[in-house]
Image (tube, one colour):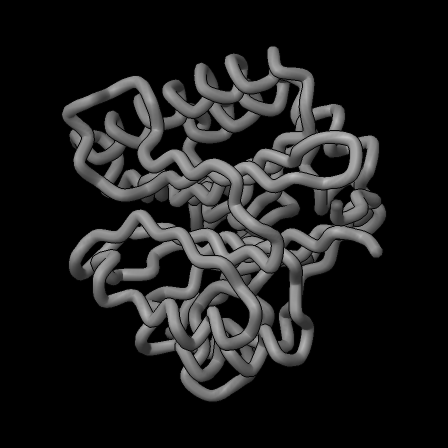
Length: 265
């Protein structure tokens, strides 16, 4: 059977728990990378996900940030925190290793800093974090194994990844520096899973709660799965699960699910 790996900024796991459980019961991805869980590890509702057959690993933080991995396959290794700054206390990165036939798949869930407002230390932190991510990815690529960097990148890569670029010219998500850092990451040899299978405009993963953005499809694409060559070679499909945005009490993001030709051990 193929291996499905999803990313989703859940925007508060406790607020979206029923939505998450409903989606997991319907679609049942093998691995789910969650961002913005807004929960400390001890209060994460792990048992509800475990009842659906998932192994759970979290890197939480009270009130904001926080990332998690849910996996139907055992997590052989779990690493918490992005290397490169021991003083960084924000919980934005978790990596797990999963065994498949013939080797392993390394999956990271990441929540890249928003960076607003530009011209402040928040934007500098965003760019520094992206440079740390680039250094981490370069190091991992030397392993020459399947690597999936999945998460909310808080970067709009291209003009056709947003409904109206004019609305974002003063936003950290669309600054030239942010987009250049994203390209530098891709230029290591990583593949944008969704754009590898769909090059159409109007494909978004985030719609603001305000001004009827969802109903008007005024969205942006900021949730990405970047793949090492070894993972990209096995990519079979990638889908934005937009229907979840229309459910009751939705996150402002929706899941993105990639399917790979890996077999479980």
